[in-house]
Image (cartoon, rainbow, N blue to C red; front, side, top):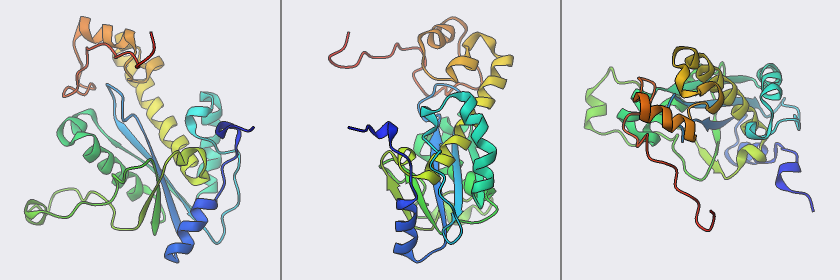
Length: 235
Protein backbone atom coordinates (compact mmCIF):
# COMPACT_ATOMS: atom_id res chain seq x y z
CA UNK A 1 0.00 0.00 0.00
CA UNK A 2 1.46 3.39 -0.97
CA UNK A 3 2.28 5.82 1.80
CA UNK A 4 1.40 9.50 1.80
CA UNK A 5 5.09 10.30 1.37
CA UNK A 6 5.18 8.43 -1.96
CA UNK A 7 2.02 9.99 -3.37
CA UNK A 8 2.48 12.82 -5.88
CA UNK A 9 1.14 16.28 -5.21
CA UNK A 10 -1.66 17.54 -7.45
CA UNK A 11 -3.61 20.70 -8.30
CA UNK A 12 -6.90 19.16 -7.14
CA UNK A 13 -7.40 21.47 -4.15
CA UNK A 14 -6.28 24.53 -6.11
CA UNK A 15 -8.84 23.82 -8.85
CA UNK A 16 -11.60 23.18 -6.30
CA UNK A 17 -10.98 26.48 -4.52
CA UNK A 18 -10.90 28.41 -7.80
CA UNK A 19 -14.19 26.84 -8.88
CA UNK A 20 -15.87 27.45 -5.51
CA UNK A 21 -15.13 31.19 -5.57
CA UNK A 22 -15.10 31.62 -9.37
CA UNK A 23 -11.60 33.11 -9.30
CA UNK A 24 -8.48 32.73 -11.41
CA UNK A 25 -5.48 33.49 -9.19
CA UNK A 26 -4.99 31.04 -6.32
CA UNK A 27 -2.38 31.65 -3.65
CA UNK A 28 -0.85 28.92 -1.49
CA UNK A 29 0.86 29.58 1.83
CA UNK A 30 3.14 27.63 4.15
CA UNK A 31 5.33 28.59 7.11
CA UNK A 32 8.62 27.47 8.59
CA UNK A 33 10.28 28.31 11.89
CA UNK A 34 7.16 28.42 14.05
CA UNK A 35 8.67 26.14 16.71
CA UNK A 36 12.27 27.37 16.65
CA UNK A 37 13.95 29.05 19.61
CA UNK A 38 15.80 31.56 17.43
CA UNK A 39 15.45 33.34 14.14
CA UNK A 40 12.36 34.46 12.27
CA UNK A 41 9.06 32.89 11.48
CA UNK A 42 9.08 32.71 7.68
CA UNK A 43 6.09 32.39 5.36
CA UNK A 44 6.18 31.55 1.67
CA UNK A 45 3.45 32.13 -0.89
CA UNK A 46 3.07 30.98 -4.48
CA UNK A 47 0.34 32.35 -6.73
CA UNK A 48 -0.79 30.36 -9.75
CA UNK A 49 -3.04 31.20 -12.70
CA UNK A 50 -5.61 28.44 -12.88
CA UNK A 51 -6.24 29.18 -16.56
CA UNK A 52 -2.61 28.57 -17.53
CA UNK A 53 -0.87 26.56 -14.80
CA UNK A 54 0.69 23.21 -15.68
CA UNK A 55 1.14 20.22 -13.40
CA UNK A 56 4.38 20.14 -11.38
CA UNK A 57 4.23 16.72 -9.64
CA UNK A 58 7.92 16.86 -8.63
CA UNK A 59 6.98 19.33 -5.92
CA UNK A 60 7.00 17.88 -2.41
CA UNK A 61 6.80 19.13 1.13
CA UNK A 62 10.16 20.82 1.67
CA UNK A 63 10.85 18.65 4.73
CA UNK A 64 10.85 15.54 2.51
CA UNK A 65 13.53 16.95 0.20
CA UNK A 66 17.27 17.14 0.70
CA UNK A 67 18.75 20.62 1.11
CA UNK A 68 20.39 20.33 -2.30
CA UNK A 69 17.11 19.35 -3.98
CA UNK A 70 15.27 22.23 -2.30
CA UNK A 71 17.88 24.66 -3.63
CA UNK A 72 17.54 23.18 -7.13
CA UNK A 73 13.77 23.69 -7.10
CA UNK A 74 13.73 27.37 -6.08
CA UNK A 75 14.18 28.75 -9.60
CA UNK A 76 11.76 26.26 -11.22
CA UNK A 77 9.11 27.13 -8.61
CA UNK A 78 9.55 30.85 -9.25
CA UNK A 79 9.25 30.27 -12.99
CA UNK A 80 6.22 27.99 -12.58
CA UNK A 81 4.28 30.37 -10.34
CA UNK A 82 2.75 33.56 -11.68
CA UNK A 83 3.78 35.30 -8.47
CA UNK A 84 5.60 34.44 -5.26
CA UNK A 85 6.93 35.97 -2.08
CA UNK A 86 8.63 35.19 1.21
CA UNK A 87 7.98 37.22 4.35
CA UNK A 88 9.50 37.16 7.82
CA UNK A 89 8.64 38.15 11.37
CA UNK A 90 11.70 38.67 13.56
CA UNK A 91 12.34 37.18 16.97
CA UNK A 92 11.54 40.57 18.51
CA UNK A 93 8.24 40.72 16.62
CA UNK A 94 7.40 37.18 17.75
CA UNK A 95 8.03 38.25 21.35
CA UNK A 96 5.82 41.30 20.86
CA UNK A 97 2.96 39.76 18.88
CA UNK A 98 2.98 36.08 19.85
CA UNK A 99 3.17 33.24 17.34
CA UNK A 100 -0.22 33.80 15.71
CA UNK A 101 0.32 37.52 15.26
CA UNK A 102 3.83 36.94 13.92
CA UNK A 103 2.58 34.35 11.43
CA UNK A 104 -0.06 36.79 10.21
CA UNK A 105 2.54 39.56 9.88
CA UNK A 106 4.99 37.36 7.95
CA UNK A 107 2.22 36.04 5.73
CA UNK A 108 0.98 39.53 4.92
CA UNK A 109 4.52 40.58 4.00
CA UNK A 110 4.93 37.51 1.78
CA UNK A 111 1.71 38.16 -0.14
CA UNK A 112 2.66 41.83 -0.57
CA UNK A 113 5.82 40.72 -2.41
CA UNK A 114 3.93 38.75 -5.04
CA UNK A 115 3.73 40.34 -8.49
CA UNK A 116 0.13 39.11 -8.72
CA UNK A 117 -2.35 39.34 -5.86
CA UNK A 118 -4.16 36.11 -5.01
CA UNK A 119 -7.95 36.05 -5.04
CA UNK A 120 -8.22 33.11 -2.64
CA UNK A 121 -5.70 31.24 -0.49
CA UNK A 122 -4.91 27.64 0.39
CA UNK A 123 -3.21 27.61 3.79
CA UNK A 124 -1.29 24.63 5.12
CA UNK A 125 -2.55 23.40 8.48
CA UNK A 126 -5.82 23.37 10.40
CA UNK A 127 -5.96 26.94 11.73
CA UNK A 128 -6.46 30.13 9.73
CA UNK A 129 -3.87 32.55 11.10
CA UNK A 130 -3.76 34.59 7.88
CA UNK A 131 -7.20 36.22 7.73
CA UNK A 132 -7.23 39.77 9.12
CA UNK A 133 -8.85 40.10 12.53
CA UNK A 134 -11.64 42.60 13.03
CA UNK A 135 -10.28 46.10 13.49
CA UNK A 136 -10.39 47.57 16.97
CA UNK A 137 -10.39 51.24 17.96
CA UNK A 138 -6.58 51.35 18.13
CA UNK A 139 -6.32 50.07 14.55
CA UNK A 140 -8.68 52.76 13.33
CA UNK A 141 -6.78 55.52 15.15
CA UNK A 142 -3.29 54.38 14.15
CA UNK A 143 -2.80 55.24 10.49
CA UNK A 144 0.89 54.28 10.63
CA UNK A 145 0.35 50.72 11.81
CA UNK A 146 1.37 48.11 9.24
CA UNK A 147 -1.76 46.47 7.75
CA UNK A 148 -1.78 42.83 8.80
CA UNK A 149 -3.92 39.97 7.54
CA UNK A 150 -5.85 39.23 4.36
CA UNK A 151 -9.44 39.99 3.37
CA UNK A 152 -9.92 37.20 0.81
CA UNK A 153 -11.18 33.61 1.19
CA UNK A 154 -8.73 31.34 3.04
CA UNK A 155 -9.11 27.56 3.12
CA UNK A 156 -6.97 25.47 5.46
CA UNK A 157 -5.64 22.11 4.31
CA UNK A 158 -4.13 19.69 6.82
CA UNK A 159 -0.85 18.37 5.42
CA UNK A 160 -1.44 20.56 2.39
CA UNK A 161 2.29 20.69 1.72
CA UNK A 162 2.15 16.94 1.02
CA UNK A 163 -0.85 17.07 -1.34
CA UNK A 164 -1.05 20.51 -2.99
CA UNK A 165 1.56 21.51 -5.55
CA UNK A 166 1.22 25.23 -4.89
CA UNK A 167 1.60 24.80 -1.13
CA UNK A 168 4.60 22.54 -1.65
CA UNK A 169 6.15 25.23 -3.82
CA UNK A 170 5.56 27.86 -1.15
CA UNK A 171 7.10 25.58 1.48
CA UNK A 172 10.27 25.19 -0.59
CA UNK A 173 10.67 28.95 -1.04
CA UNK A 174 10.16 29.59 2.68
CA UNK A 175 12.44 26.79 3.86
CA UNK A 176 15.35 27.68 1.59
CA UNK A 177 15.22 31.38 2.46
CA UNK A 178 14.96 30.83 6.23
CA UNK A 179 17.72 28.21 6.23
CA UNK A 180 19.94 30.70 4.43
CA UNK A 181 19.22 33.35 7.06
CA UNK A 182 20.14 30.97 9.88
CA UNK A 183 23.33 29.75 8.18
CA UNK A 184 24.40 33.37 7.73
CA UNK A 185 23.50 34.20 11.34
CA UNK A 186 25.66 31.29 12.49
CA UNK A 187 28.74 33.13 11.24
CA UNK A 188 28.00 35.89 13.76
CA UNK A 189 26.88 33.55 16.56
CA UNK A 190 28.81 30.30 15.92
CA UNK A 191 28.31 28.83 19.40
CA UNK A 192 24.62 28.02 18.82
CA UNK A 193 25.09 25.68 15.86
CA UNK A 194 22.45 27.35 13.70
CA UNK A 195 24.10 26.18 10.49
CA UNK A 196 22.95 22.71 11.58
CA UNK A 197 19.90 23.14 13.84
CA UNK A 198 18.49 26.26 12.09
CA UNK A 199 17.47 27.67 15.46
CA UNK A 200 15.43 24.69 16.66
CA UNK A 201 15.61 23.21 20.13
CA UNK A 202 18.40 20.65 19.94
CA UNK A 203 20.24 19.62 23.09
CA UNK A 204 23.42 21.38 21.97
CA UNK A 205 21.52 24.56 21.17
CA UNK A 206 19.88 24.63 24.58
CA UNK A 207 23.18 23.87 26.27
CA UNK A 208 24.80 26.81 24.49
CA UNK A 209 21.99 29.11 25.62
CA UNK A 210 22.42 27.91 29.21
CA UNK A 211 26.15 28.59 29.02
CA UNK A 212 26.20 31.88 27.11
CA UNK A 213 22.70 33.28 27.53
CA UNK A 214 20.38 34.25 24.66
CA UNK A 215 21.39 36.64 21.89
CA UNK A 216 19.22 39.18 20.10
CA UNK A 217 18.01 36.57 17.60
CA UNK A 218 16.52 34.37 20.32
CA UNK A 219 12.84 34.56 21.23
CA UNK A 220 13.31 35.84 24.73
CA UNK A 221 9.68 35.43 25.77
CA UNK A 222 10.09 31.67 25.29
CA UNK A 223 11.45 29.14 27.76
CA UNK A 224 14.82 28.71 26.05
CA UNK A 225 16.75 26.53 28.46
CA UNK A 226 14.33 23.83 29.63
CA UNK A 227 15.07 20.40 28.23
CA UNK A 228 12.58 18.93 25.71
CA UNK A 229 9.97 16.72 27.30
CA UNK A 230 10.02 13.07 26.35
CA UNK A 231 7.10 11.86 24.29
CA UNK A 232 4.57 9.83 26.22
CA UNK A 233 5.26 6.11 26.08
CA UNK A 234 8.85 6.57 24.89
CA UNK A 235 12.10 6.38 26.79
